[in-house]
Every structure is written in structure tokens, then in C-alpha cells.
Image 1: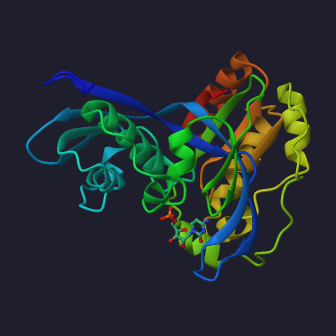
Image 2 (image 1 turned 180 degrees about the vertical axis):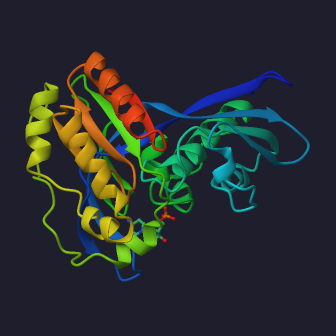
Length: 283
Ligand code: C5P
């Protein structure tokens, strides 16, 4: 049943974190084959939709200035795919072009909200993929192993309790440029069967043997990424520090909330110009 006329539907658009990101090949169409352990955090954007005669999007929130209104906005493209005219509000809290899937999470949240508003089914997986390679994984919103170009999704149900400090040094990174800068595109995948990851320490031990294959190319384009992983790694006592996606956001992994929150506060006061957030991993 569709939501009552005039009612709002609100959906959270959680930050997406690539705990690993292996680039294992390239298709004939140029898209890269990936093998990535993807999780979501309890920090994110928020989408609100309300039935309207025509489609419109208003962007507010602390990161709104970085996202000028555009007909190409992924939220509007998602709404056109659903074929539902609506007044949409995007509360933009995640930094844009930052490797934590903000735009893709917003598109996925818009699809979910518009499906609820209109009682229409979600688009097919193939249709969702046309919005972007990260939109299908964001539609899941739970830990998954992501393969193919982003469309092969295997749930990873037994993730441990863990916390993250997310840090972005304020440089936007264009994903295609990072892919172009890769020195090789045929890196080994993760093990076929992931080990049991029952604690944050076990997760960190596993991750230490895995990689983000985009980190070196991103660092060459955006040197502050090096300062960010170094600050997370050396100054916060985290179990592991690494870049997410194509950057520039990096994460530190923690076994408890208090340590993550203390580390986030210390990092934010040391680096007032950075975007820093403590977050729980959504399991
Ligand atoms: O699919 P999306 O628009 O999010 O991807 C942005 C760009 O990143 C693509 O245009 C492509 O250049 C690159 N990309 C890739 N392989 C992927 C995902 C993205 O080469 N699996």
C-alpha cells in the first residue's frame, strides 16, 4: 500500500566503507573487476520524499555547498528510474567525491523511499546498476563481498562488533582518474572463502593481509591521503588504517566505541579543517 497522501518517507543513506578493495581485472568496456569487503557505518546522509506534481530536489545540510544543484544528481536519476514525481530533500552530511559512496547511498535511499511512497517495486538489479556501480551494494546496506564491477553481491552475515573513525582531508578525488592511474589491474582477489571474523581483532588481522589497490594511485593524485592514513595509524591507536574506495576518506578500525570516539575528538582538534566522524559498523 502506498504511504498516505501528504506523508513524508525518510530513509537513511549510510556511508559505505571498502574495508578491502582489490582490482582484479578490466572488462572490454573499460570497467574494472573488483573484489571488495564492503560495510556500512551509522553516519550518513538522509533522504526525505513527499508526493508532488513534479520532480524536484532540495539539498541542505553541512556538506550541501559542495554539491551544486544539477539535473544529473544521482537522486534525480534514481527518481526518474522509479518514475515517481516527488519533492525530495537530501540532507547532505557526508563529504562528496570522497570514497564512501555518498552519491550512491543517496540514490539507493531515494529508491527505497520512493518505493515506499508509491508502493511500487524497486527497479531490477540491471536497472539499478545503470545509476552507478556502487548503487546495488548501497541498496543492500549490510556487509557484503562485492565482485564483478559491483553487481555480484554475497552477504557477509557474521561481521564482528566494530567501530570506525572516518577522516577526510578535504580533497575531492575523481574515481575515473584514480582508475586511470593504476599501475596494474590484475591483482589477486581475496581468498575464495573469507575466514571467520568474530572479533574486531580477527577482522583487523585478516584485513592486514588484504589491500586497497587504489590507494597508491589516489595518493599520487591527492597527497593529503598519506597524511590522513598516517595520522589515523600513528596517533589514534586503531587496529588498522586504510583508505576507502578511490579516496580520499580513510578509516581507522577500533574494537570499542569509546576508543573510536576519543580518537575522533583528538584527530578533529589536531586537524580542524578535516571531516572526522566516529561511527559504528552496521552488522
Ligand atoms: O559506476 P560509476 O559511475 O559510479 O563509476 C564512476 C567511474 O568509475 C566510471 O565511469 C568508471 O570510469 C570507473 N569505474 C570502473 N570500474 C568499476 C566502477 C567504476 O572503472 N567497477
